[in-house]
Image (cartoon, rainbow, N blue to C red; front, side, top):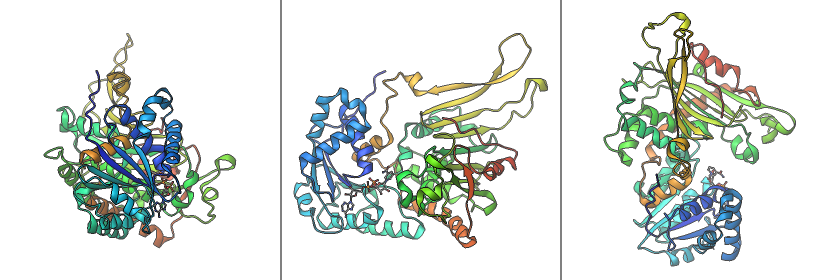
Length: 484
Ligand code: NAD
């Protein structure tokens, strides 16, 4: 099978924060891969815009170094890399002042798509939107890509939506959640709505519960300052995990188009019950030496910010009433592993002896580190020993099923940037969705603050505080092992 790459028309992409960490690690390596695939043509222009003093030559070197570091395969494509670097230029721009804006406006080409990637601190988003508008760069061919975090609570998200809306229409605003750009996440929709097999079973009559885990093995690293003001609830739960929950739980949209999909996701968020304090556990990792504890790493001895959160969510609608969703995310856990597990109910009656054992079907959607989908089915253990049942995976690893070339799909950022250029907002969060998500998480955070709640300590390399295990044990269920 040979993958079909559909080239996009030449476009301009301005990367505000073009000398930052995200540009280096994700944006440029991703763009280069799309260039190598033939999706991006030689008339496209990439313009780095940041506050560092650099000329084009210096900036191209910065980009080349970034690509070599974060996409080592580039070493085999020297010629391609040189061709790619020719598309790149740099303008010194100050989001908070006048520097660079006239120059940016002068090179603008009204006949092509112009995308502006806000890869800067969120406090600059409003200023960038305002100045783009002021310099005639908010016309219909213009779009803005907004990084996370989108606000830190409902009020700030609303305010940010208001500010952006003053200068850009909703159809021009692309709020990134890179989890939605993952191949498997999109495949989740293909599996649900492209097959007859699953959808009839996709409800509380057949699904016992759903687990969503986004586990990291690393700590806060160099982001301690930011993270300590945010925490797992704001940094991960409000966006990534809730987006995954929405895709699993939503009703079939009438069409696979942006508003139809986003309307259905919004309905899920609005149908979520408020989370009671008994249904949520927050933790903070401990550690020593090389693997120092959270408080040491963030340099705040009294920090009460959580690096782990687990909760039980209930969706009050016809499809899901009675089927709990268990969500957890944290740092310094046993492994870097993200997955969604749809655990089906037991067969209503077993025709086999007790010795045969009882088994359940589990559909596992693996997001990290390797993407793939696995369906656990029950079969007879081979051999003459009578009827004993075992679980075996019907493994749909993309690499095996499609061949390595076909499975070498774009990473989330590449795909999402290409969607911006094509004008497809399906995988981006709409303003009202983000607000609804904050409206659900805000009361929990407020209650922690009112109660002066202290996160529970947990050991590095485990699966979070014991109380998080209890969240499921008390319902007669258990978390799946965190395993890459
Ligand atoms: P960074 O601190 O590494 O880079 C910031 C960039 O902004 C630099 O290029 C700097 O020159 C530029 N800048 C600062 N002030 C400016 C001004 N007044 N005018 C113009 N440019 C200015 O930040 P980062 O890690 O690249 O993150 C960028 C954005 O992406 C943030 O919103 C962050 O939350 C988000 N994000 C980053 C990551 C990541 O992995 N780095 C992941 C998810 C989201």
